Image 1 (cartoon, rainbow, N blue to C red):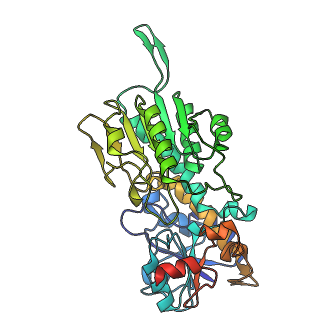
Image 2 (cartoon, helix red, strand yellow; image 1 turned 90 degrees about the vertical axis):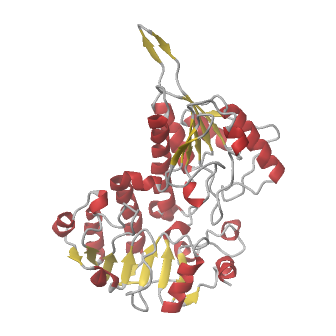
Image 3 (cartoon, rainbow, N blue to C red; image 1 turned 90 degrees about the horizontal axis):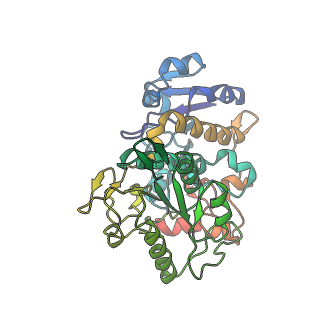
Length: 387
């Protein structure tokens, strides 16, 4: 079995497989070919791969493999019919990727569709591994740009009060952001539409921002239930009120397959104090802050700094590549049966939960999007997007 690792497109510093994963891949029966220079931006060099037993080759040689593993969708040019591509395809935002694979007879495995609720899928969950690092880096960016110290300091010249940090959302990224800000010495406030999140927030050192009328808006799968626009507005108004005198505000709200919701409108930014920093973790999908400019750091007229850095995990390329590689290696080796990669419709990780479950309805149906040039029967929602 040949497994190819292509160089990522410009702007993506991570690499799909790191040298540390090669031992496990070889043991499973894979011959790994990596495109020359593919790991350089993440500080993994060709010599490291060769020493670990991989072959360093051209892009053509990599794309000729029957299994292609990467982060960004590599396109279909040069890839043979019947090949497998495992990457973060984000298929609801990029249905043209799915169409291209269907036209070319390629099986597309989208790693961002991993069903989180399955215990054996947790070690394959690229969303969680990358979100953890993104939450960590978001706070560091806020600390780097805010014009004051973070922890409380007692000096001969006076006492410095600790910075106030507000984290909007307490999913994987939010909880890591809370923990990081707390470790830096900040006083941390955090919000979530799930009342059950209060205990998680407090466990990592945050103070839960409660909204009048809040209930346990969580379904059986552990995800937030759909909320009325009125209540969402109430939550945002309450949290932005708490953030009005904050030094750092981190926004984390991301909706699967949809543009990021606006949680910090321009009117709220106008009330934030000068020198405060908003770090928008979702600049790449529209942004949570109405004033965010993707890929840029701007300062508003009232002195608020808004950080719209895209691809936060990519700013920690060495670590994020290592974690992604671990996820991907665990996933791809789990598919090996008797010396071949077997795409089975009986694998819940590939095809997801039963069609009548809440989990399936949310669209997190499994990593298998199309197989042998056809839409997988369970991916009915995605089929509708393609029409």
